[in-house]
Length: 340
Ligand code: KG4
Ligand code: ZN
Image (cartoon, rainbow, N blue to C red; front, side, top):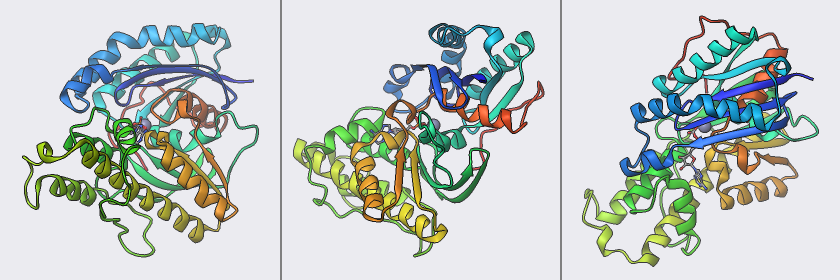
């Protein structure tokens, strides 16, 4: 059994986790910074970095404590080094390098998006691969062909905004709370998803790429009037806002489900896995599950706790990279962009 300590600081969650053999989560500690960034309506990079510095040591200690892990029992240290906010990533990578050096443990560098792609496998008693992976987060919207945890190929990605980013921006337009995904999901519960026909941008019949900037602008103009960017929100009723939220959410879900099914058709794979922060959206999970059921496909959504950013997925994928001999060393650097 190999126990991996995972560290995640790519954006606004400070997280550490201890996972055995890539699947058995012994601890998963996440300190969200939502309260620090909420009043700015989005993540402020300098504030995120500072909060990571202040919190990370205690979070790692807590993760080790909850798991009842000792440093001798740790087989490797895995850390997110890409993609993300450079200043934020540096805090986690520096902590991981320090522990790797002090504890004399192998260091593993993990791509955050690939860890999201692996996250639906956490806790399963069998490997779900090969599979089409749909990863929908605040920074990325990607389709992958996942042959194994260490063999992941990008089939398509967003050409502009990520789906989660669109949720966050539309929530701001509608005067709903930050982060936007959960507040849109809440508002949409009382709304009619067919009230407004927002565009479903497909980028061509066979394309597995995504674009969500058009729908964001469509919502903006729907609220304020064509070409206008302010003044319209006051005219909307609660019901009007709920209808827009539900219609927006449905348009995004339609595109995501359709593209996932297109990826299935193009690859011939029979399993679909779903991960990333937007995968926490219940109507989305349910509709993708239903589409898979209709076609006799196996479907695994990441457990709720591993949808939004966490270090369990970093430790879990880190285990497989470690086993594959993909080790980093103290020269490890961070990168703003990833491969997916
Ligand atoms: O994966 P994640 O925690 O961070 C990134 O790697 O980006 O994803 C965060 C994104 C945010 O845009 C947030 O609004 C969205 O996931 N999100 C949701 C829901 N919960 C979080 N979007 C839709 N519905 C939700 N329930
Ligand atoms: Zn993420």
